[in-house]
Length: 82
Image (cartoon, rainbow, N blue to C red; front, side, top):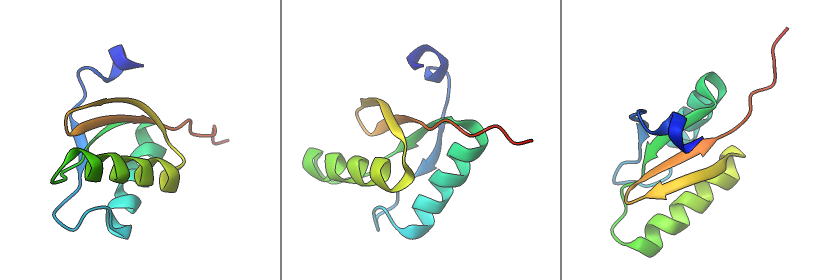
């Protein structure tokens, strides 16, 4: 997964308001479409960033693949549509 995500650019960036419902909606849509995404988490310090990442993973039912600095890689399997 990390190798596949290496060339990806962040598709969602959290703003100064943190993890809002709009941000969570964008993450959900991106995961539904791509399964594997990167998100840039802008937070003042490490603890805030860690809390935001946990909230994103919980609220989006995504698996944290990797976190490097402000960029996290998330994965959520999308059920096959018939």
